[in-house]
Image 1 (cartoon, rainbow over the protein chains, first blue to last red):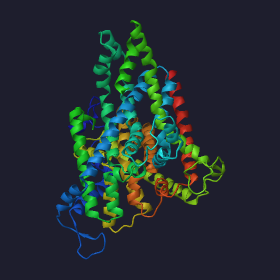
Image 2: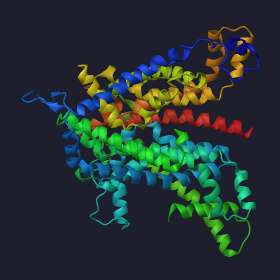
Image 3: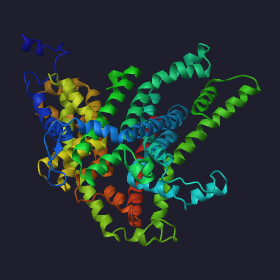
Image 4: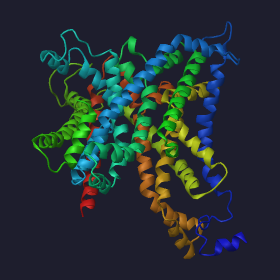
Length: 304
Length: 285
C-alpha cells in the first residue's frame, strides 16, 4: 500500500522520489560526519570529564595522571580561580552589551537607512565584514600597538587632554574589553542586519498610520521583529568572547587575565591536566547554562 | 549620547513629516546622527587594518613596533622573513584539507537532515549545534587531551582533524539553508524524466546546491585560516600563520607578516567588492 501511495502524484507529503524504501540512505549520508564529530568532539569531551576527575600519580612524571573520582579537583579549581570565572563572564557580558550598542545602530543604518541605495548598502556591508579579510591575531596586535604608550594615537589624545598625561591604555581591563568588543562587532551586526533587512517597510508605515510616534514604532514594531537577529548576535558574541584569551593575553595585564589564560597555562606551563580539564568543563557548563537561560527568557527556543 | 537616543533620533527622522522648529531640529539631528554614529563604528572596525597596512611599509628591521620610515622592501620580498612564508603555506595546506573534508561530510549531513526523516534527527541537530556553542578553549583542550591519551603527537595532521571538526558544523548549517530552499519538485521532475536517483543527484540536486556549498567552503577556509586558539592547543611545533604572529608578538613581528596580512586583505576586498557591486546592480535592475 505504501508503495502504491508513493507512486501516486498527489503524495506530495511523502519523502522525495528515488529515496523510497531506502531507509538506510540517511544513515549513510550521516555516517562520515557524525563519526567525525563523535571521535573528535564527543569522545574528547568525555575524556575531558574523566581527566578532570583524575589524580596525579604519586612519584610519577610531570603531567602523569591516573583515573580516579577526585571531585576535589572541581572544588579546588573553583576556590582558586573564581575571580577568573567572574572576570571572564563580566568581560564577556560587557563586550556583548557594547557590541550590541554599537552593532544595532550600525545594522539599522545599513539595513533601513541605506535601503534605497543598494550600492552604498553593499559597500557598507563589505566594510563591516572587512576585518575578517585579515588575520584576527594580527588585528589584535595592531590594537596593542595603537594603544601603546608611545603610539601616535595615545600621544594625540594626551595632547588634546582627552587622556591625562600619566594614563596607560595597554595592560588594562579597558583595553581587553575594547579588544573583545572590536573583535565581535561584525558577529553582532550581521545577524541584526539580516533580520532588519527582511523587515517590511510597510509595517513601519502602518505603525505611523496608526498614530504611533517614532519611538513607539521602534519599540513595538522594529525591535521585536529584529529580536531573532539580536539573539543570534548576542550568542555569537557572548560565547566566543567569554572563552577568549587572545585579547587578554595581548592587550591585558596580569590583573585582567581571563579563564582561557588560566586553562592555557595550566595545560602548557604547569602541565596540570586535571585542573585544566576541570576549569574547561566548568567554563563550558557555565556558558551553556547562561545561554539556555537567556534563550528561554528571549522566548526563541525554535531558533536553535 | 546613548545609542537609544541615536535610534530614537533616527526613527524620528524617518517619520516626522511636519512639526514646529523643535521637531525640524530633531529631524535634522536624526538625519546625521545615525550616519555619523555608523561612520564612527566603521572607523573603529577599520583602525587596526589601516595600522597593519601602514606598518607593512615600515623600514622596521627586526621588530615592527616604531615607525622608522617608509620602504617598499617588505612588499618586494614578502618571504624575506622565511618563517612567515612557511607558516602561510602551512595555513593554506591545512585550510584546503580541512575545507575539503568538512564540506564533503557536512553537505551529506545537511542533505540527510533536510531531506530525510529518521530517528536520530533531533540528536544529530544537537550534535551539530554543540561544537558551535562550545568555547574554543574547551574544544582545543579536550581534543589535545584525546590526542595525548592516544599517544598521538600533535602536529600538522592533528590540526587538520581539529579544523575539520569545527568547520563541519558551520558547513551543515550553511548548506542546510540552501537545501531547505530547494524545490523538491525539480528532483521529482528529473525522476519523471527517467533519471536514476544518482543521476538526479549529480545533474539536478548538486548544481542547485552549488552556491550554498561554495559559501560553506569559503566560510570553512576562512575559519580554518584564521583560527588561533584550537590550533595553538593541537599543533605541537607546527606553525600556522596566526600562531606564528602570536608567538612572534612577544619579540617583535617581522614587517613581512603585515605585508601578507595586507595583501590578503586587498585580494579578498577586491573580490568581495566586485561581487557586491554585481549584486547591487542586479537588485537595481
